[in-house]
Amino acid sequence: MQQPPVPEPRSTVQLTLTEDELLAQLERRDLPPEIIEEICQSSAAMKSRKVCVALAAHPRSPRHLALRLIRQFYTFDLMRFTLQPTVAADLRHVAEEQLIARLTSVTLGERLALARRGSQAVAAALLLDKESPVSRTALENSRLTEAAVIKALMRPNSPAAFVELVCHHPKWSLRREIRMALLRIPHTPLARALEFASTLPPPLPRDILHTSRLPEKIKVYLRNNLKERK
Image (cartoon, rainbow, N blue to C red):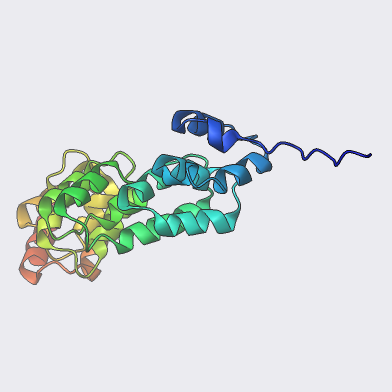
């Protein structure tokens, strides 16, 4: 009598590997798609937040799976995801948008942590936070760019407290383009505006003052000072 075929044994990767071993597997960029699928189908594996972040960040993970996981991430899982070097640019953008949308509802301590350790986009979004310590911390973020600082300064709702922070910052206040931006906005103090204008070739601040939103008294003072320099 013919014996019934013996079913092939199912892979037991998800049943035998620990969280650390799964994470080590997911560090392999050449991980076979069937292993990724198996991990996805394991309820035990998917209970690990670290595994879910690594899975969504893996370049071979299906896009629909990555998007579903991103929508379920906690705040700091989102932050860790955006900092993964293997994450596709479009997925990183989705995660950053979701994280930025949550900023108004997270605690001060969480915003401070995000300002310190978050991606460039998240740090930039926190520059205009209502709490000065958050803005100050975001200015120290190593991923922050000069362009992001200038964009925040030029926003119509850029608060005086933030402008003051940038005016006295040991790094950003020395940048030529930022000094030019500070001469264009209304909250730059006279002493700092005078100092910044003095470091630029006279034709440059003269041109800037034509469209500057500095108070008229300060612009008159700066123009007179520029005439004396000439």
